[in-house]
Image (cartoon, rainbow, N blue to C red):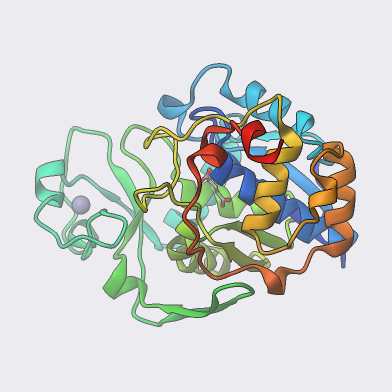
Length: 316
Ligand code: GLU
Ligand code: ZN
Protein backbone atom coordinates (compact mmCIF):
# COMPACT_ATOMS: atom_id res chain seq x y z
CA UNK A 1 0.00 0.00 0.00
CA UNK A 2 1.68 3.23 -1.07
CA UNK A 3 -0.64 5.40 1.06
CA UNK A 4 -1.13 4.08 4.60
CA UNK A 5 -4.20 5.62 6.16
CA UNK A 6 -3.25 7.88 9.04
CA UNK A 7 -5.92 8.41 11.66
CA UNK A 8 -6.94 12.03 12.24
CA UNK A 9 -4.65 13.22 9.48
CA UNK A 10 -6.29 15.65 7.09
CA UNK A 11 -5.66 14.67 3.52
CA UNK A 12 -6.98 16.40 0.43
CA UNK A 13 -6.40 15.74 -3.22
CA UNK A 14 -6.50 17.18 -6.71
CA UNK A 15 -7.55 14.69 -9.36
CA UNK A 16 -7.25 16.10 -12.88
CA UNK A 17 -8.13 14.10 -15.98
CA UNK A 18 -5.25 14.38 -18.47
CA UNK A 19 -7.44 15.30 -21.42
CA UNK A 20 -5.49 18.53 -21.97
CA UNK A 21 -3.58 21.25 -20.11
CA UNK A 22 -4.93 22.82 -16.92
CA UNK A 23 -7.06 25.96 -17.36
CA UNK A 24 -8.31 28.61 -14.97
CA UNK A 25 -11.24 26.43 -13.85
CA UNK A 26 -8.93 23.55 -12.94
CA UNK A 27 -6.62 25.99 -11.14
CA UNK A 28 -9.52 27.05 -8.91
CA UNK A 29 -10.10 23.39 -7.92
CA UNK A 30 -6.38 22.83 -7.36
CA UNK A 31 -5.98 25.97 -5.23
CA UNK A 32 -9.15 25.33 -3.20
CA UNK A 33 -8.27 21.73 -2.39
CA UNK A 34 -4.62 22.63 -1.68
CA UNK A 35 -5.46 25.45 0.73
CA UNK A 36 -8.24 23.60 2.55
CA UNK A 37 -5.79 20.75 3.22
CA UNK A 38 -2.78 22.92 4.12
CA UNK A 39 -4.81 25.26 6.29
CA UNK A 40 -5.58 22.26 8.51
CA UNK A 41 -1.98 21.10 8.53
CA UNK A 42 -2.89 18.30 6.16
CA UNK A 43 -1.37 16.63 3.15
CA UNK A 44 -2.36 17.25 -0.45
CA UNK A 45 -2.10 14.46 -2.98
CA UNK A 46 -2.34 14.43 -6.75
CA UNK A 47 -4.02 11.69 -8.73
CA UNK A 48 -4.03 11.54 -12.50
CA UNK A 49 -7.49 10.32 -13.54
CA UNK A 50 -6.55 8.57 -16.76
CA UNK A 51 -8.98 5.70 -16.17
CA UNK A 52 -10.67 6.64 -19.43
CA UNK A 53 -7.74 5.59 -21.61
CA UNK A 54 -9.20 6.71 -24.93
CA UNK A 55 -9.73 10.28 -23.65
CA UNK A 56 -6.25 10.76 -22.17
CA UNK A 57 -3.95 12.93 -24.29
CA UNK A 58 -0.27 11.91 -24.53
CA UNK A 59 1.92 14.32 -22.59
CA UNK A 60 -1.00 15.98 -20.78
CA UNK A 61 -0.28 14.37 -17.39
CA UNK A 62 3.36 15.55 -17.43
CA UNK A 63 2.32 19.03 -18.46
CA UNK A 64 -0.24 19.15 -15.62
CA UNK A 65 2.42 18.17 -13.07
CA UNK A 66 4.91 20.71 -14.45
CA UNK A 67 2.23 23.40 -14.30
CA UNK A 68 1.44 22.59 -10.65
CA UNK A 69 5.15 22.84 -9.82
CA UNK A 70 5.45 26.16 -11.62
CA UNK A 71 2.46 27.40 -9.57
CA UNK A 72 4.12 26.21 -6.31
CA UNK A 73 1.26 23.77 -5.77
CA UNK A 74 3.57 21.07 -4.46
CA UNK A 75 2.01 17.76 -3.57
CA UNK A 76 2.88 15.07 -1.04
CA UNK A 77 3.80 11.49 -1.80
CA UNK A 78 3.81 9.73 -5.14
CA UNK A 79 1.35 10.66 -7.90
CA UNK A 80 -1.28 7.98 -8.38
CA UNK A 81 -2.18 7.03 -11.99
CA UNK A 82 -5.56 5.38 -12.45
CA UNK A 83 -4.37 3.66 -15.63
CA UNK A 84 -2.18 1.45 -13.43
CA UNK A 85 -4.94 0.37 -11.08
CA UNK A 86 -7.15 -1.90 -13.16
CA UNK A 87 -6.66 -4.86 -10.81
CA UNK A 88 -7.81 -2.87 -7.78
CA UNK A 89 -10.93 -1.64 -9.57
CA UNK A 90 -11.62 -5.17 -10.81
CA UNK A 91 -11.53 -6.50 -7.24
CA UNK A 92 -14.08 -3.89 -6.11
CA UNK A 93 -16.26 -4.67 -9.13
CA UNK A 94 -16.14 -8.39 -8.40
CA UNK A 95 -17.21 -7.78 -4.82
CA UNK A 96 -20.23 -5.84 -6.01
CA UNK A 97 -21.17 -8.39 -8.68
CA UNK A 98 -20.58 -11.26 -6.22
CA UNK A 99 -22.92 -9.65 -3.71
CA UNK A 100 -25.63 -9.31 -6.37
CA UNK A 101 -25.34 -5.52 -6.25
CA UNK A 102 -24.16 -5.12 -9.84
CA UNK A 103 -25.13 -6.87 -13.04
CA UNK A 104 -24.26 -7.03 -16.75
CA UNK A 105 -26.20 -4.82 -19.14
CA UNK A 106 -26.22 -5.58 -22.85
CA UNK A 107 -28.60 -2.83 -23.94
CA UNK A 108 -27.65 -1.16 -27.17
CA UNK A 109 -27.21 2.57 -27.58
CA UNK A 110 -30.53 2.60 -29.41
CA UNK A 111 -32.34 0.88 -26.57
CA UNK A 112 -30.80 3.26 -24.04
CA UNK A 113 -31.86 6.27 -26.09
CA UNK A 114 -35.50 5.48 -25.29
CA UNK A 115 -35.08 6.21 -21.55
CA UNK A 116 -35.49 9.63 -19.93
CA UNK A 117 -32.27 11.55 -19.32
CA UNK A 118 -30.67 12.60 -16.06
CA UNK A 119 -29.19 16.08 -15.66
CA UNK A 120 -25.82 14.97 -17.01
CA UNK A 121 -27.47 13.57 -20.13
CA UNK A 122 -27.10 9.86 -19.37
CA UNK A 123 -30.19 7.62 -19.45
CA UNK A 124 -32.06 7.03 -16.19
CA UNK A 125 -31.78 3.27 -16.45
CA UNK A 126 -34.78 1.49 -14.95
CA UNK A 127 -33.06 -1.88 -14.55
CA UNK A 128 -34.12 -3.62 -17.75
CA UNK A 129 -31.23 -6.14 -17.77
CA UNK A 130 -31.46 -6.52 -14.00
CA UNK A 131 -35.01 -7.85 -14.34
CA UNK A 132 -34.62 -9.74 -17.60
CA UNK A 133 -30.98 -10.55 -18.45
CA UNK A 134 -30.44 -10.82 -22.19
CA UNK A 135 -27.89 -13.21 -23.67
CA UNK A 136 -25.62 -11.28 -26.01
CA UNK A 137 -22.44 -11.87 -27.97
CA UNK A 138 -21.22 -8.37 -27.16
CA UNK A 139 -19.27 -7.62 -23.96
CA UNK A 140 -21.66 -6.14 -21.40
CA UNK A 141 -21.42 -2.95 -19.38
CA UNK A 142 -21.72 -3.50 -15.63
CA UNK A 143 -24.37 -1.48 -13.80
CA UNK A 144 -24.84 -0.89 -10.11
CA UNK A 145 -28.31 -1.44 -8.63
CA UNK A 146 -29.63 1.63 -6.87
CA UNK A 147 -32.68 2.05 -4.66
CA UNK A 148 -35.19 4.67 -3.65
CA UNK A 149 -33.66 5.52 -0.25
CA UNK A 150 -32.54 9.15 -0.62
CA UNK A 151 -28.82 9.83 -0.22
CA UNK A 152 -28.23 12.95 1.89
CA UNK A 153 -25.00 14.75 2.63
CA UNK A 154 -23.77 18.10 3.84
CA UNK A 155 -21.50 20.07 1.56
CA UNK A 156 -19.29 22.61 3.31
CA UNK A 157 -19.86 25.21 0.57
CA UNK A 158 -23.15 24.26 -1.10
CA UNK A 159 -25.05 23.18 2.03
CA UNK A 160 -27.37 20.19 2.43
CA UNK A 161 -28.01 17.93 -0.53
CA UNK A 162 -30.25 15.01 -1.14
CA UNK A 163 -30.79 12.82 -4.16
CA UNK A 164 -32.91 9.78 -4.91
CA UNK A 165 -30.70 7.64 -7.11
CA UNK A 166 -33.50 5.48 -8.42
CA UNK A 167 -35.54 8.46 -9.58
CA UNK A 168 -32.77 10.86 -10.66
CA UNK A 169 -29.94 8.61 -11.87
CA UNK A 170 -31.06 4.99 -12.27
CA UNK A 171 -28.78 1.95 -12.15
CA UNK A 172 -25.47 3.45 -13.28
CA UNK A 173 -22.50 2.05 -15.16
CA UNK A 174 -19.44 1.13 -13.10
CA UNK A 175 -17.59 -0.61 -15.94
CA UNK A 176 -18.22 0.31 -19.52
CA UNK A 177 -18.74 -2.22 -22.31
CA UNK A 178 -15.31 -1.23 -23.74
CA UNK A 179 -13.72 -2.49 -20.49
CA UNK A 180 -12.94 0.95 -18.98
CA UNK A 181 -13.87 1.30 -15.33
CA UNK A 182 -16.19 4.22 -14.71
CA UNK A 183 -15.05 7.40 -12.98
CA UNK A 184 -17.63 6.85 -10.18
CA UNK A 185 -16.07 3.53 -9.16
CA UNK A 186 -12.43 4.53 -9.63
CA UNK A 187 -12.76 7.77 -7.66
CA UNK A 188 -14.27 6.01 -4.64
CA UNK A 189 -11.72 3.20 -4.61
CA UNK A 190 -8.83 5.65 -4.98
CA UNK A 191 -10.02 8.21 -2.43
CA UNK A 192 -10.03 5.31 0.03
CA UNK A 193 -6.67 3.89 -1.08
CA UNK A 194 -5.08 7.34 -0.73
CA UNK A 195 -6.63 7.91 2.69
CA UNK A 196 -8.45 11.05 1.51
CA UNK A 197 -10.43 12.73 4.29
CA UNK A 198 -11.74 15.75 2.35
CA UNK A 199 -12.90 16.11 -1.23
CA UNK A 200 -12.74 19.69 -2.52
CA UNK A 201 -13.60 20.06 -6.22
CA UNK A 202 -15.82 21.92 -8.69
CA UNK A 203 -19.58 22.00 -8.17
CA UNK A 204 -20.08 20.36 -11.57
CA UNK A 205 -19.40 17.15 -9.59
CA UNK A 206 -21.98 17.84 -6.89
CA UNK A 207 -24.45 15.65 -8.74
CA UNK A 208 -21.98 12.72 -8.76
CA UNK A 209 -21.49 12.82 -5.00
CA UNK A 210 -24.59 10.79 -4.02
CA UNK A 211 -23.48 7.99 -6.37
CA UNK A 212 -20.05 8.05 -4.74
CA UNK A 213 -21.48 8.03 -1.22
CA UNK A 214 -23.75 5.13 -2.17
CA UNK A 215 -20.74 3.19 -3.50
CA UNK A 216 -18.66 4.02 -0.42
CA UNK A 217 -21.41 2.60 1.77
CA UNK A 218 -21.77 -0.58 -0.30
CA UNK A 219 -18.01 -1.13 -0.23
CA UNK A 220 -17.79 -0.31 3.48
CA UNK A 221 -15.42 2.63 2.91
CA UNK A 222 -15.05 5.69 5.15
CA UNK A 223 -16.78 8.83 3.87
CA UNK A 224 -14.68 11.95 3.27
CA UNK A 225 -16.11 15.43 3.86
CA UNK A 226 -17.20 17.35 0.76
CA UNK A 227 -16.80 20.94 -0.40
CA UNK A 228 -17.87 21.85 -3.93
CA UNK A 229 -16.42 25.11 -5.25
CA UNK A 230 -18.17 27.44 -7.68
CA UNK A 231 -17.38 26.63 -11.31
CA UNK A 232 -15.78 29.22 -13.52
CA UNK A 233 -17.91 30.28 -16.46
CA UNK A 234 -16.74 32.07 -19.59
CA UNK A 235 -18.31 35.29 -20.88
CA UNK A 236 -21.21 33.39 -22.42
CA UNK A 237 -22.05 31.71 -19.10
CA UNK A 238 -20.68 28.31 -20.13
CA UNK A 239 -18.52 26.30 -17.75
CA UNK A 240 -14.88 26.78 -18.62
CA UNK A 241 -13.57 23.51 -20.03
CA UNK A 242 -11.18 22.12 -22.54
CA UNK A 243 -14.14 21.30 -24.76
CA UNK A 244 -15.27 24.92 -24.85
CA UNK A 245 -11.75 26.06 -25.68
CA UNK A 246 -10.53 27.30 -22.28
CA UNK A 247 -6.98 28.63 -22.73
CA UNK A 248 -4.21 26.68 -20.98
CA UNK A 249 -2.75 28.19 -17.80
CA UNK A 250 0.06 30.57 -18.53
CA UNK A 251 3.37 29.18 -17.27
CA UNK A 252 4.90 32.66 -17.37
CA UNK A 253 2.37 34.37 -15.06
CA UNK A 254 1.67 31.99 -12.21
CA UNK A 255 1.26 34.68 -9.55
CA UNK A 256 -1.32 36.64 -11.52
CA UNK A 257 -3.37 33.51 -12.21
CA UNK A 258 -3.12 32.37 -8.58
CA UNK A 259 -4.18 35.82 -7.43
CA UNK A 260 -7.19 35.68 -9.75
CA UNK A 261 -8.09 32.19 -8.44
CA UNK A 262 -7.91 33.42 -4.82
CA UNK A 263 -10.06 36.41 -5.74
CA UNK A 264 -12.57 34.12 -7.45
CA UNK A 265 -12.70 32.00 -4.29
CA UNK A 266 -13.61 35.05 -2.18
CA UNK A 267 -10.29 35.26 -0.33
CA UNK A 268 -9.57 38.94 -1.13
CA UNK A 269 -5.85 38.65 -1.87
CA UNK A 270 -3.99 41.95 -1.26
CA UNK A 271 -2.83 43.81 -4.36
CA UNK A 272 0.57 44.19 -2.67
CA UNK A 273 1.17 40.54 -3.53
CA UNK A 274 0.73 41.01 -7.27
CA UNK A 275 4.43 40.84 -7.85
CA UNK A 276 5.24 38.24 -5.21
CA UNK A 277 6.43 34.77 -6.09
CA UNK A 278 3.77 32.04 -6.34
CA UNK A 279 5.28 30.54 -3.18
CA UNK A 280 4.91 33.78 -1.22
CA UNK A 281 1.35 34.34 -2.41
CA UNK A 282 0.39 30.78 -1.46
CA UNK A 283 2.07 31.14 1.93
CA UNK A 284 -0.14 34.18 2.57
CA UNK A 285 -3.17 32.22 1.33
CA UNK A 286 -2.41 29.22 3.58
CA UNK A 287 -2.69 31.48 6.64
CA UNK A 288 -5.69 33.47 5.41
CA UNK A 289 -7.77 30.76 3.74
CA UNK A 290 -11.41 30.60 4.89
CA UNK A 291 -13.67 28.05 3.27
CA UNK A 292 -16.63 30.02 4.58
CA UNK A 293 -15.69 32.97 2.35
CA UNK A 294 -15.99 30.85 -0.81
CA UNK A 295 -19.16 31.85 -2.68
CA UNK A 296 -21.72 29.18 -3.63
CA UNK A 297 -21.67 30.40 -7.20
CA UNK A 298 -19.85 33.19 -8.91
CA UNK A 299 -21.86 35.92 -10.56
CA UNK A 300 -18.82 37.78 -11.77
CA UNK A 301 -18.33 38.34 -15.42
CA UNK A 302 -14.83 37.18 -16.09
CA UNK A 303 -12.71 39.56 -18.08
CA UNK A 304 -11.34 37.84 -21.13
CA UNK A 305 -7.88 38.89 -19.94
CA UNK A 306 -8.16 36.51 -17.00
CA UNK A 307 -9.29 33.66 -19.14
CA UNK A 308 -6.67 34.16 -21.81
CA UNK A 309 -3.96 34.42 -19.19
CA UNK A 310 -2.89 37.77 -20.65
CA UNK A 311 -2.94 39.81 -17.48
CA UNK A 312 -0.01 42.15 -17.79
CA UNK A 313 -1.99 45.03 -19.33
CA UNK A 314 -4.49 45.14 -16.43
CA UNK A 315 -1.97 45.65 -13.71
CA UNK A 316 0.84 47.77 -15.09
N1 GLU B 1 -11.11 13.89 -12.77
C1 GLU B 1 -12.22 14.75 -12.48
C2 GLU B 1 -12.15 15.99 -13.35
O1 GLU B 1 -11.08 16.33 -13.83
C3 GLU B 1 -12.25 15.22 -11.05
C4 GLU B 1 -12.67 14.14 -10.15
C5 GLU B 1 -12.80 14.54 -8.69
O2 GLU B 1 -12.24 15.54 -8.26
O3 GLU B 1 -13.47 13.79 -8.01
O4 GLU B 1 -13.16 16.61 -13.57
ZN1 ZN C 1 -29.39 -3.33 -20.22
